[in-house]
Image 1 (tube, rainbow, N blue to C red):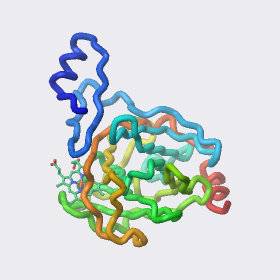
Image 2 (cartoon, helix red, strand yellow):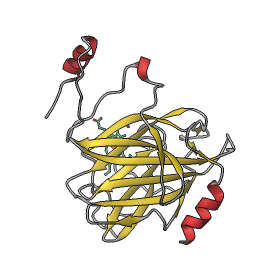
Image 3 (cartoon, rainbow, N blue to C red):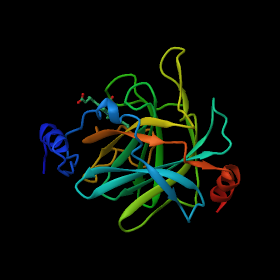
Image 4 (cartoon, rainbow, N blue to C red):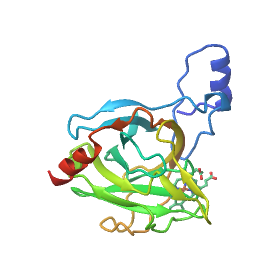
Length: 236
Ligand code: HEM
């Protein structure tokens, strides 16, 4: 099913409720400027790990979404802070990527996939729209609690150092606001197509067949027990 943007916006102007789904091999353009600061995420309390996240459902096909969940420490060091990321994906997602700078280019990319019962996290950075090389500026600690594969989904939970504060080429630094809404981007390879060497986090990646952008509210993702939850969930 494909809706054109023209039809959607015309329907919105007429007050007609019309839902638009991203479809394979297409992408949506950015939302109108007036909506740019409205958060697309909502609060999610995860009983398994104990974290309060804000989550966004990235709909990659009709009725199928990848959940991107982000948790922050509270109080937070506004210039540089760790985050906990949880990604939950249906099994037909070959790999899922989060671009922390809101576009593919010049920001940490968190790419993940399942290899059997094992979750692989691969840190990448793309200076151009081509296969992104690995990136040492972000590091991940997998939390055993909150990381698993079942018959329908795979998911991981990990602490990231270097996702929320990073260089954007040269000496320019970008810092995501811990008290506001940040524009992020995602991409995915669907149809179950995994990277060519799925046991290695340095594998060549196949190109995504869908991507999009969203506004994620970091201000409601604070956890006063962030450090103790990380320790507990890492140890299992
Ligand atoms: C083999 C790996 C990859 C290749 C060859 C590739 C290539 C490309 C190309 C050619 C475009 C431009 C498409 C257009 O203009 O319509 C694009 C856009 C994009 N890619 Fe990738 N990509 C790869 C991996 C990734 C990964 C791992 C992410 C992680 C999130 C990602 C996120 C995006 C996003 C968000 C866009 C939209 C344009 C932008 O915001 O920069 N890509 N990619």
